Image 1 (cartoon, rainbow, N blue to C red):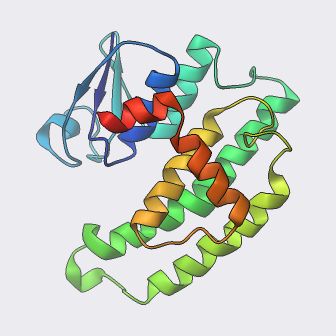
Image 2: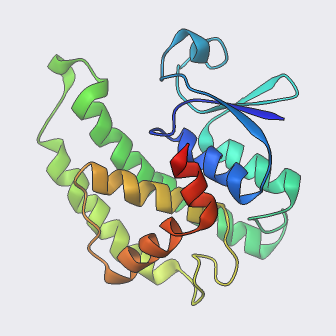
Length: 195
């Protein structure tokens, strides 16, 4: 059984959701970032941490792709053009969505008060909106980002959209708002959210 260390209010939600999509058993060990139980496995103190057979794996994206590859679901096979496109989309989402939201969080509550720059959030909101326009040009025709099949980027984007709304980073593109609502209605998402 997998063990997930972290809280659902963090990027650990991505891993919990993935495990629910895969219908795999797991134990959730609620631990906040930078707590003793997290630092023991990840010196940066960041969550989530996935423990598989006693081995810790850190970084939500690495964990998601590991689980997808290991169980042959929610991903395209390594070495295919589809996987290259999937990985490219994953990197785009990490650069243009996750990084923007993480920078906003750092300047809201993570950094010491004297190092926070409140004005940076206006620039980050502009970047978040611009990324929505660019994403529209990169996605397929299917219900998911890669087309007919749900993949790792769908979990990352859906999480980032929810994170963005909570941080008052609005969804400006109508199609993206509809996508977010559809993804949130998935049974596995609902089970993860109930955790």
